[in-house]
Image (cartoon, rainbow, N blue to C red; front, side, top):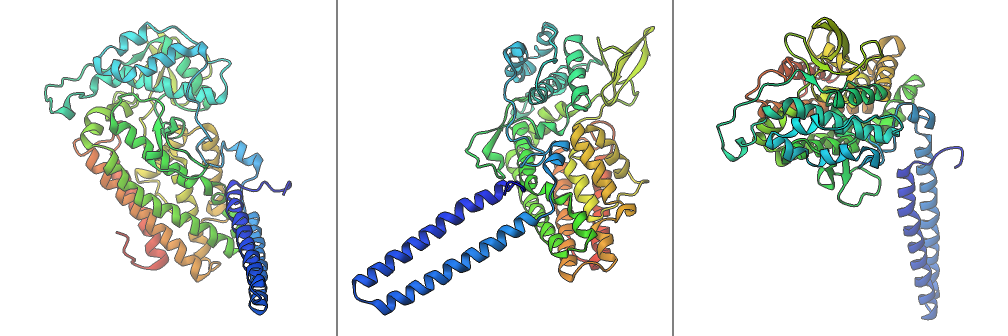
Length: 493
């Protein structure tokens, strides 16, 4: 057991198995003794034999079950660390909820952020904020700083575009002019922490990874959106919290299978179809759960609260003129964070970012699903370049995992499960599982399209210029194409 780290799931199974076995044996012994006292020796002997046989059978089953668990192809501890994974997958075990006292000014401003945004006083409050350094912060604290500072950034730029009264029926909203620069007290530490984490200095889907706390007890396994809350928010709107708790809960569902999912190519290499089927069966359960969880979006995210109030806070820095947002005080001669570049402005070089806004395409899991299942996004269609571009919006370690997965399941390195099955290496059961996974992925993407279409119906373009409808249609079509090729024209509604 020391040579193989027994995963938490197995320990939890042990915690149920051994007490149950002990209780069963205890009950059997008590029954035998009771029968002996009543002089029913023959019946006592029969009960004793049956109990012994059942105990031996359970122990044999347990040994085989444990062997299968330990035999799974999983990432090593070193690779888990390399890719920034925990037993929750891309989620940390727990998030840092508060920075040290040296950065209390940020935390105090964060606590007041929704009220300051609604009152229109945040820009003045930010401009009075002292310059703080991120040097000396731990990695967990860096993540917390990144969440706070990106929320400050989008608030400084976009709070004036939120129609705060629209939810109550106030139609008198007039948006304010969006600034095109960030003051140095925000720009310098935001750029520094983004550079340290390998991320663009803008709101990303890390809001779904590093910004949750438990409000109900959790045993280390998957959780639901009502089990958690956001640590900090930009708008204080229920739609904001609802959206991100659903997306974080989805991450918790896929998390436990990520270490085995990305390693299934090793089982494919030796045609261990039992192992491939087991991993695919787990993926099917995750995708099925995802389809069900999309219903939580309708229940927890009010369309008006999202579109009118929270949506502007998901915008990035990209604009049609490609002038971007200037990061005042950032050294143009230094190393730059992703999406940042040096441009001449008013006779001097300045650092600007043209980062896109928050998007589901920044979630590493969907690159993994597509690569392993064999969903091919054509380079002349919008989805493929968008997916490649979004790699830069993932945390550095997660981006490395996505790049390795793209390589491991490329045609040059053995290919995807679709190619594996087409080569005649899989069983009928494996082919069926693969098709069912694709059907569930289609169903999920169709549900995502319906939600996005409804919540952004007044905004046909993506928040940063890309036509999200075209990209989502491309993703659905590419996934359906594999279903049709693998199993014929199967319904995927």
